[in-house]
Length: 262
View 1 (cartoon, rainbow, N blue to C red):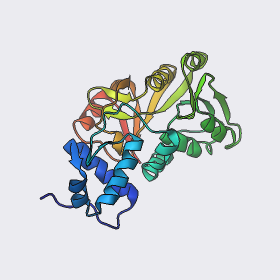
View 2 (view 1 turned 135 degrees about the vertical axis):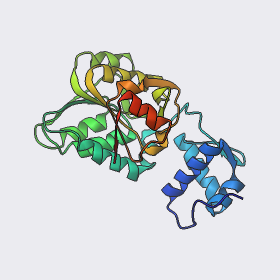
View 3 (view 1 turned 45 degrees about the vertical axis):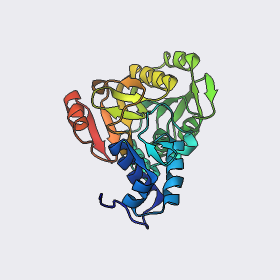
């Protein structure tokens, strides 16, 4: 019999993280197995599985859940609630890496949005983004901040502009840094996403910047998405909340990626 990894009094976020880790490790688990392992009721597990399925972190089926195929993500507002404490840690650590006068491209994501909140206080920044909310945060931040918002088709689910017009708009800019969020980091396939348009935009931002910083919480490490964004060696820094484990840790080191643990 497996040992319980949670307690009845654990927070919902912590319990859901443990559920995700357990299911991804096993491939698939039943509600009964999860309830026994985490020492909570089956009703609690079912509610958690519904939440995790909505986030795209697991695939719920009748009586249990399976590891995600990472072919979709939930809305930005839903993703903002997941791993929020960890994402805030990452945002603060990442913002501390930049100084007044920096020029950055920032794509849309739950972690990059929190990053923009922290970054806005630096001052004298120049930012190019496809996210209206990030543009507002930077513009309302410290003195002398400037921001350009990329045009294009507006996607309400992700609260971002996407498509050919957005990508074409990037061609006018060159920046010191690109800061992007991703859905998965794999030792072989590299940095990955689940949406082809978001992956294309992130690639183009990286191409127009001198250095690339990726923000990713621990749930993204050691997983695969559907679309490659960048190979490992194209990224300069990975800011995360937990040190990667092998084989990913070794692959990042071999590729020269600096790992910053918040």
